[in-house]
Length: 457
Image (cartoon, rainbow, N blue to C red; front, side, top):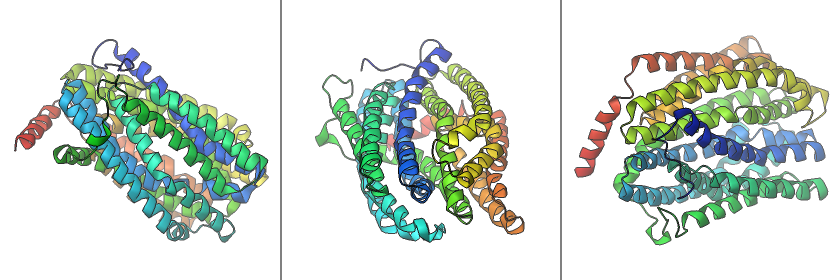
């Protein structure tokens, strides 16, 4: 592939930044999917409709995050084989990854459509937005095969150093999504179900473009549709690598569903205001997410090529850039939130809830950045269980315990907001201790020896 970037050679900083920038722009446009829904719905259909769309975010990420996190394990495996120039296993991994993505997408469609009402009830979704929330989420999950397959294809391309083509496809599909949102609800006022439909149509177009490129004969590793299937040895490696990442995403989502349930108890204005804040936070934190993703590929390729010192230097560079950038962004969010929240809705209660959450959390973004970046490094090093257990303890068990106990004593929404900075601090402390004490670089050789023995067996 002409668009491949070999991250095992050349300037560390230049390669990471060059690889991360297209990912950032691509993810920026991906955020436009749900934000376009929220902007159009909030301005044309009202605050109840906005609450229905934004309050379903944690539930959607619960299911999407699990399957996409699991499929992410294949990206690490592919990057490692690519760095080691093991071409045969790269091809097998790609076809196994696609088969696994198809299976995950089908399962997610069934689970999302069937169980959405029950989960929304557990989240204490208010009755005045319940019907619209169920409709939105069911239509979204009907198209989840396209959502999962796009992320699988994107992960395959990124694993071999191509972060540009996913960007091109996302720009195109995001423009389509915005135009459809404006048409369906800005012009015809068809309702929240059509906001979800616009997202799914756009994601399907991105998936088709990705598959068209991957099956092209000009590719170094062209996908052959008849070869899409499971190589059981590689599938086991993908699941061993990806399942902890999938569980980590779900663990975070379970905790956030509990937090969202507490937010819901303060009414639809709180749901709309906090939902709008989460959309803005998603945009604000994109550079950090992309650094984390780029580091996963960088570490995977360099450890596969046995470039251990290079991997260590890249990790240090990524951590420094991530926490510095995160804090600059956090300060900007703190001061500009009053203007940003008005883009979604102008009702005074909605605006005030969004501002209060931003002023509570945004100055602590550097802690969130540190945790995400170290998690990305550990995944690239094949230690995906480390971030899983850290997130389980800090972002799930402790966060749920805190929200449950403290809100029963001090029933204010700001107490709920503080759950995030407190648990970010805790996970950062644990990650720092692990990073300083664990020999994660040189333990990689022992992992590879075990993998080769298992393959021979």
